[in-house]
Length: 269
Image 1: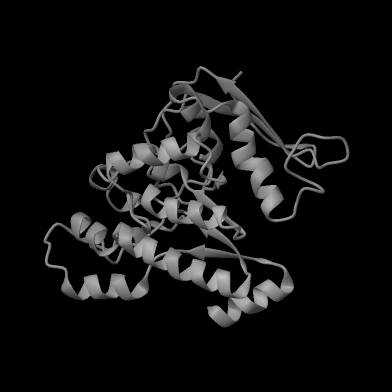
Image 2: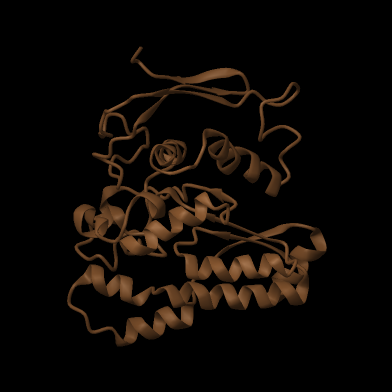
C-alpha cells in the first residue's frame, strides 16, 4: 500500500480506503468464543480495527503526500483521528453511509443478514454520535456503499458466510432528508453532502455538483409528507431484499433527471 500511495501521489490522484485492520480481524476470528453469530461478528470487527487502519494509512499519507478519502467510517472515535490529521494539513476527506446514520446494531437482529456490512452497524450511542458529527460538519459527504446480492449469497445459513453489504443505493438522499426532520441539518447541507462535496473531491465540478448554467442537468424533484413504507415493489434494485424494507421515509422522489432527460417519474401525483 505504501508503494501504491507513493504512485498515487505522483499522479495527483486520491486513494479511497476501506479502513479495517486485517490482522486485528483475523486475530479475533481465531479467538472468538461467542455463540450469538451477530454478536460474534460485531466482536470480530471492533472500532479499534477501524482506528488502527486509519492511523496506519495516515502515517503512510504523511510520508508520501498521498491524498486520502476514507469510505464508510462508522464511529466518531475513528473520525476524530481523521479530524486531527486534517488540522495538521493532510489532504484527507471522509464519508459515512446512510445505514450507519439511521440504524444501530439491533437492526442485525431485526433484519438478519440484510443488515450485515463491514464495518458492522454500531450501538445506538455510536449511531447518535455519528449523526451529531455529521450535523457539526465533521463528515465531508455521505455515500450509499451500495452492495446488493442475489438471495443465494445472502441466505447461506450462517451470518459469517453471508454476503456482507447493504442494498441501499436508492436511499442516500431520502435518508439525509429524513435527518433534516430530526436535526438542524438543512436541505442546503444535504445538497452539499450528496452533490457538491463529492464532485469537488473527485474533480467533477466542471460538469456536476451544483445547479449552474453550462453544467449537466442532473436533478431530482422531491415531495415531502410521504408515509409509505419501502416494499419490494418500490425497491428499484434487481435484488429485492434490503435493510430498508419497511422503513418509512418522510419524503419521496417525484422525478429524476439525468443530463436534462427524465429517467424516473413516480406514478403518484
